[in-house]
Length: 223
Image (tube, rainbow, N blue to C red):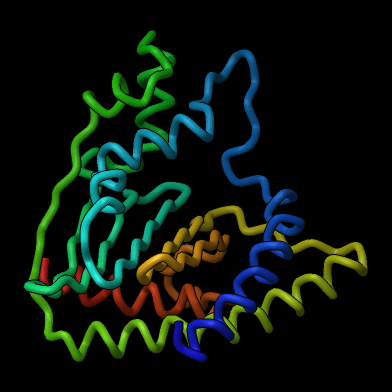
């Protein structure tokens, strides 16, 4: 394990701990009323795992694997996989063809569809495109990701300090950003809640989110 990876691992453990206390108070997709059926959060994530082929992706023999998932409140969800294998270095871009799938799942459930990941996934559609990329570009992205963790940790410390004063910033149209970085037997995972960058003038708080958006723009430009 490289010194940069080891340092980043320590940072991300603290990052995740603070996130658990902060995101617990975010209103994002947590309210469910009897008169308005909402898909269970765990079922939602498992349905996306099926549609974005996440389980199969994690069993690959790649040297490094980075999974970026974008879950906006209203825009289409997408997932990006960066893989460095012995024969191929590639970016795989998955995107919903049904608009916002959280909202679509809610409608399906209200129409009587069973709350089951396989059942819901069978009624939803995604596009997928694989593009080979230069190995040095992936190495650069991996390095920038690990560096971005420190910037995100600083932002979280500021939010934690603000939280202790009793004031909380609520983002009504935000995005949940999930990332998994797998290198050999080591793995980093984090969830961040930040602004929806498709909105004009929206600037993310977290360095890791800024990095994810850089990769997303590349994927969209090669879609």
